[in-house]
Image (cartoon, rainbow, N blue to C red; front, side, top):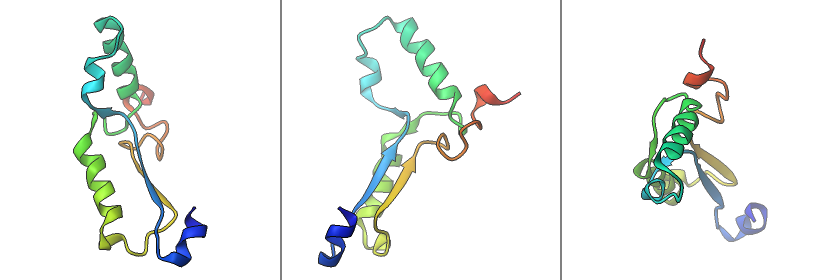
Length: 95
């Protein structure tokens, strides 16, 4: 899409969120202790050692939608607390 739409002045980018704290975690249809264990394990792989917030993803999207990103095209902004960029940098991997 990026190559096809560039001549029309349409920029194509994507924001890819990681583990984001949203209300859906409160509605998971499994026992609370399972959710707690899962979230502990997931967050252990995040180098910043915390949940991402929806507002942080929104700010990345707002940047992509703004004139501040007028020369950003065909890009992916990863908003995941470092999971992708430092795969083994999370607390569970630290010795």
